Length: 320
Ligand code: A3P
Image (cartoon, rainbow, N blue to C red; front, top):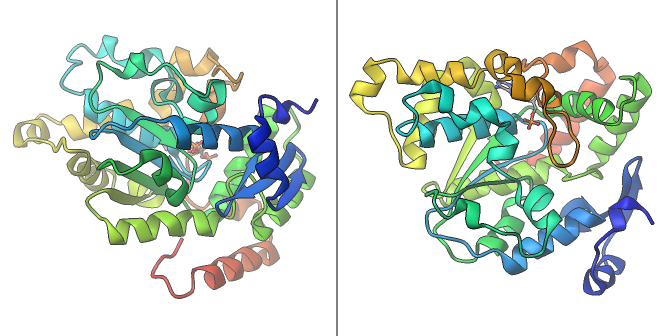
């Protein structure tokens, strides 16, 4: 049996047969609530929507894959945990990868089980989760709780190049141009895991405009160019703003240093560890640059993506 079809309930199989479907090099995909999933991830999304019991203080970190999720997780953990870890050696980020600390609903928790054990979160308030689902799908699982969601958006071309490298590393393939070319076509057609990227970003963009107290829209590029201001913005939103004393003592800079790509990627746990899905922790860290796509996409590819995205975002103020 195709690995991606394990653990699919009869009800979900019936649902899948009624959905638009397609496939890529990694498996069969179907489009549920406007977003493409592999079958096993769809089952996890449904498990989440049906079974998750939200708490009023829950925080969800959301993103399109390869948009800097690892960084956002690290920064959020560091912000929320900062009062508990005077001794830097006991900081959770030093002994676990950010994805081990902040699990994904649909690619960790509800993929393993339809009713995952959440007791490890019971002592932590707020509980911190993450997802790559679009906002409308996520909201079904959060029911009517006064959730807080942070969305990290990244330039689509950089997210594509990052995914290319990540996929080749995960599949132990050479980073071949032919793989990029086929991923480029899927990316542009919108048919690909969690695609289309424009609908994904738009769901959170609109959510942040309608409900700014609950949905914060952040950008990878702004985190790179104005890290202090963006970290303070994140802290305010999460309900843990920096005090004057903290700012004066250099706490903002300390958190940025702790969570920097150089520091995280140099930690033993990230050099040698793996996730439960057997993904090397080090594959979450590469260059971390803005505009790296310029090294790989032809002018024709650039124009094609730009035109599609401009067309798809028409009528919104969103640009990325
Ligand atoms: P590149 O492949 O462009 O280098 P995700 O965390 O969503 O999987 O995204 C991975 C991307 O975020 C990779 O981009 C990775 O290098 C970058 N990244 C990971 N940790 C980072 C950090 N601490 N600071 C900045 N960028 C980071």
